Length: 441
Image (tube, rainbow, N blue to C red; front, side, top):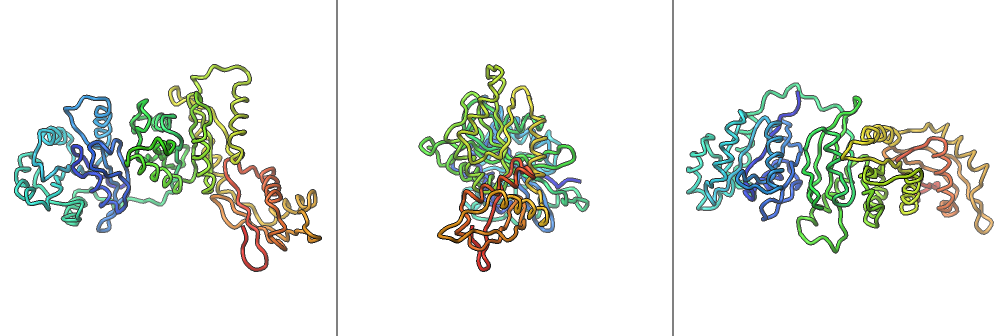
C-alpha cells in the first residue's frame, strides 16, 4: 500500500505552512505573514517514530470568498482532502473560533476522514484562555501547539501517526526520476503537467506568477515512475518586487538542482528570450539533461518552413545546449505531449548511458588519428587513454601528458566525436583532463 497521507487545512494565515515545514524538517513551503501565500498543494515526505508518511500543505481556505483564486484553492483543498488518510485542521488560538473556522469544520465533518484539530499559537496567554471554545467545532479534543516555537509538536505527531492505517507493507524501492518543468511565468508549465496528470492538480490562470512554490506530482508512464516538478517562473530581477517571489526564485533553482531532467518550456508566441537563456543556462551549468518544449504551438500560423525557422532561431540563441532536443507542443490541445513523455524516457536513458572503456578508447584513438591535438612551443598534446567515471551526467576522464596542451576547442572536438557515435541526445557531456598527478578541468 502507499504511504499514509496527512493533509493540513485551515483558513489563511493560521500557520499551516510553518507547521508543514516543522513536520517535514525543511523550509519547503513559503511562509510569510500575508494571507494566501500558499496557493497550491505542497507535497513532502516526513518521518516520525518509524512511520514514513506524506504531508500536503494547502492554500488558506475561506468558503465564503468567491474570487477566482479562492475557487481554485477550494478545488485544490478538495483534491488534497480526498487523497488524505488524516486531516489536520489548524486554527488560530489567539483569534479564537471564527465563522470561517466553523464553515471549514462543517465541510471536513462530511469528508468521513480521520480529523485532528490543532490550535496554533497556543503559547500566547489569550490563546490558553480560548482553547476550550474550540470544542464547539465538534472535531474532538483541541491539541495546543505553537509551530513557530516548537511547542507540542511531538505530542501532535504521536496522535497523527496513531490515526494512520497500517503501513507495514509499504515499499519505496522503486526509483523515481525527477522531471522539472522550468521557464518564465505564464508559458504553460502547470498546464502541461495538468494535461499529463489528467487532473487540475496545479492552479492555472493567465496571471503570471500563479505558481510560487515548486510542486511535486507523481506520474507513471510505460512502467517508469517519475516525479513531475512544476516550478515558479523566473522573471527578470527588476520585476521581482515581493519577498515571496524572491523565495520562489530560490525554490526554482533548488528544484533544478534536485532534478534529473529539465523540460525548458518556451512560449511559441514570444520566442526565445534572454530570460529563457538564463534559466536554461543554469540547468546546463549544473549538468542537467535538457529538453526544450515550445508550448502554445496551436496559436502559431504555420507554413512549410515555420518549424525549421523556429528551430534555427532556438539554436542561434541557445548554442550552448545544441544537444537538447526540441519538441513543439500544446498544453491546451494535448498535441505531442505523449511524444514529450517518449522523449523524456529516451533522454533519461541517455543520461544514464555508460560506455565500456575499450569501445570508448577506440573512438578517441580514431578521433586523434584524424585530428591530432595542437602543439605549443614544440610540445605535442597527447591523450593516452580515456574512461567513463560517472553517469547522470556522463563524465569522461582523459589521461594526458599535459592538460595545458589540450585546448578547449579540442575537447569540444572529442565531445562531438563521442556524440557522433553514441548520441547522448538531451544530456551534457563532461570531459576532465588528468595528468599523472592531480586533476585539471
